Length: 186
Image (cartoon, rainbow, N blue to C red; front, side):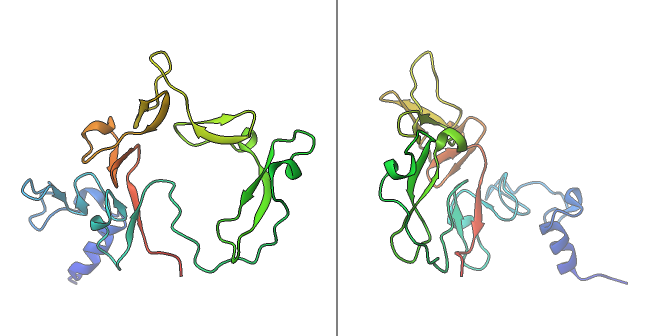
């Protein structure tokens, strides 16, 4: 029984038979003329991106690693603070933070970065319990994908992967991982 080509393509998209998935001739090698592999731009698999043009399905957009795709329906949240002092009366490290998906502006007490930690290239300020750019100098370099500028680490800007130290240039900045294609939430 012959299976339709769509089954083979779907198998490739889901990673089945990864080595068997290739171009129309079955070679599995990228086409040097357009720098694209069987699943998309060189080095990316379905659902990964460097820019929104890499996200060909259903009008989805490219989001950098860790970027919020938005909220969709808002949440009814009641504020319980209007400043850090209310949340941290005895030095617990809690902070007053805005709620991203609230229907109207709201802030609630949450754990500060002393408990939650900070992202790559950031450091926790012990005084404010909030994350900020990590300090850097000749003796304290920034992590890969970051550049030291004016004593602080910031994402390395790029137009291709070359300055990203083995990482990916996603929407003009270097990241260790490629971006993700996603539709906005309903």
